[in-house]
Length: 158
Image (cartoon, rainbow, N blue to C red; front, side, top):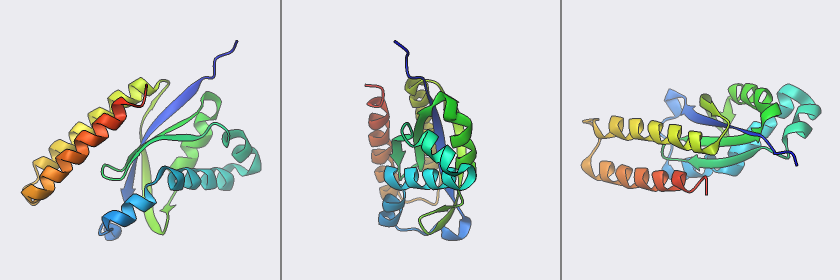
């Protein structure tokens, strides 16, 4: 029996400077796994045509997406890594907003992606908590969201 070999990409969504004033509801709607997957599928279709879309549509999956930290994890077949990675780099619009998507890490297991995502989460929360311009009430809510995101990541490999 042949094992299905996957690859995982940890990505971060970076909004343009003039569009940073998005409301929380809009961000949650834009950063849903379905909308991210649709944007990736459209980019694959645009860059690789019907062949690339047909090759990747069955095994492309968003395993994790967080609207607070703007991180997401994509799973694809090992053979399709280059197609998906290149297409992610060409995405410029997510919904109606101009974005850039940075690929932070590539791995063959979800466990390694979980470790890297936790590392990026801890860097993000330390940066936010050390910011003097953020109110204490916002810092406590960010800390709660950080704990929720960490708990979600721990459930990925189960």
